[in-house]
Image (cartoon, rainbow, N blue to C red):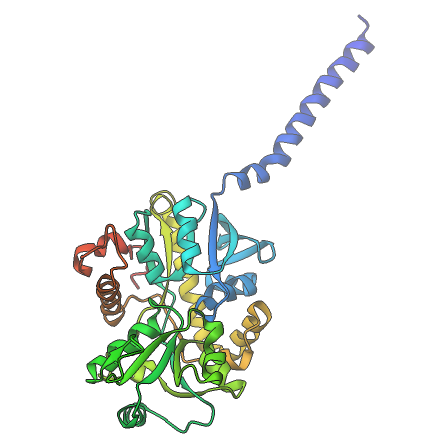
Length: 374
């Protein structure tokens, strides 16, 4: 073999090795990305989930928080970033309801999600291995009368109820919703007789299941109900559209202070995700905390973002009394106990929560270890 052919052969080998090395180096980042945990994360089109929606919308604008979401596919895929380091790839799922969310958890198709605490309780009762990690918000619920009403505050509402010759019909959208549970509890504590039996004419208040928030306005307009209780932004939207009048914020019901910081929506995760990806959850809770604080301080900007993302009127979002927080305060925990007791009294539980007190199942329901200690 000539020297020329040896040189050509050696060159080919070296060039081949170079190509292999180049391929490995170029594959490095994508291979690293493939090692990121890929998690399905769910939320619902509601102002109750504003902190997560705003975190997606603001994405790298929140980089100064130290944790943010980097868009991969807008509204569909985001990387959870700890500074410049990706921790996980989130596949975003829009759920229609809390029950749909818990069904997906049970099927193993949901890893992290925002949903009502009562829906998560129901899933845990049915044996789905998951836990609530933190609240997403408190408050932001109202009692709405027709637009011509001049009632304002508890004293006037109570006087109106006591003076009525017929039971005052108050609608709600779900039997396990926070507004329904608060209004029934407060009315009973005030000494008023509450019923769901339309034939009980000796009652002070008849609670009416309207099945959906979409029925609030039609039910009030048609006279099916005299008033309704609902979560933000529905009370504010009704006033904005001049089809309702907010008589009071449910946090102001008696006894004073009892309904402050009452729970509604939470962030939850599967037990397997809690065990396998604690740092991802810690940073997700941190992001939710910081985004919630931003929303509380920037109501106008939040309103604009929600209007573009969910269609909620910006002005209604801005006027809402909802408070975003991830703090499971003492009142919040008392509220969870109230939920548990009422759902048990309604025979909603058949499994692990049936007949249990909050103290007995606290560790089964909650894992607050990802909250900042600061």
